[in-house]
Length: 198
Image (cartoon, rainbow, N blue to C red; front, side, top):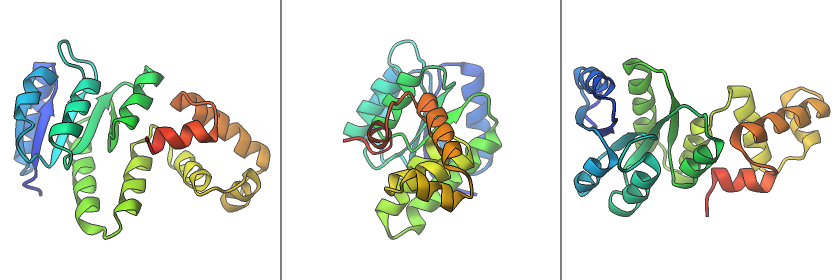
């Protein structure tokens, strides 16, 4: 149970109402709006989490994240997406999304993600470790792929990655190619910048 304040930005009224009701029943304080343009005037409030759809008619999720960064930087950010557009996924990560949530999903899944993000923020004393963990959780990857990315970002060679994960070097190369394709990047450097934007 949480009493965290959630700004829910979703242009589909039925989905927004369903999520808002479900989260409210679980103790979250939810304010729902139908578009990023409606959300911007509310960003002066100290939200714990902003949950936003990526595709919206007037002000989309990308532009809303820009405004969240400017007006409400302490809020955690959960972005609802279909992962169909790789360029947008990378852009969302670069704008500081803490978690990318792929449609379809239910209230329980969203609530579990919110609880975990809020617990990570309050429970960890090392903000960099916390940030790193959130960024990896937010990537549209399997658990095994996230382990591979974590090792890669620590500077491990393909040989070290293979030894640590108990797989062959060719399997590491194949897995990295698949990860790069998923995230729309071409190299370790681009992957690093997708996870840790500068």
